[in-house]
Length: 284
Image (cartoon, rainbow, N blue to C red; front, side):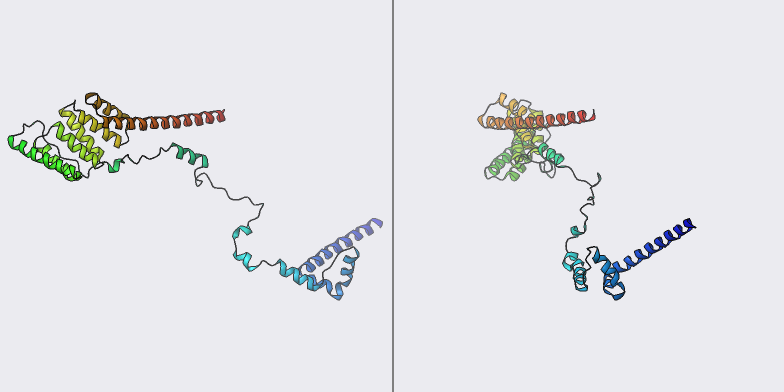
């Protein structure tokens, strides 16, 4: 009998606790119920243990203070992000280059030389016409070539290199030789068309391999293309045949640029070898 009474008492307590929990949930949803006559006993019970039940005015102020303001709702959405929530990370497919990668690329890029002409701008719209070197010129051809040379020299003196090149082309078509090819090539060089100048230099050297003027023209054309090694070689060849101070000044400038290019290439090579060595050490 005693065991049965204890079981009944336990069931009564469980039911009471469950009812009390339901009552607390109702009060949480509507705290003003604590101020009703029916709940006076419960309010006094809370206060007897040192608890504080706010009056209806305090409860209203607390509720209004807890509402989010309009300005905060319309402000930055960064306020809505939980401080503990990890920020989304860029994936390998969307992430850009790292600062280290960008700095390496910038260092490896050699500073652009304003005197160097890009290949896209280094040639004529159409390749220049050439004469037939195997044909023996007639007297009339020589007269035509002579008149064209005089007109070309006049145009060059006035700075009209396009017109001068056209006159040199007339001379080339009438009586081609290494000198007229080289002279037309110099006009193309003045027009900043080094690829066209290079072709004329090579045509001149086909006729006369020892033409100092053609070799120097070829060297200057290579220099304008930024090919410092080739430029130094051709200029040196031309100087060995016919030395002049103006070409020597160009040679010195080409050598400086060549040495700078080599130093830059060596620096890039050393950096890449160092990075590869570090990568291999990390893999060990």
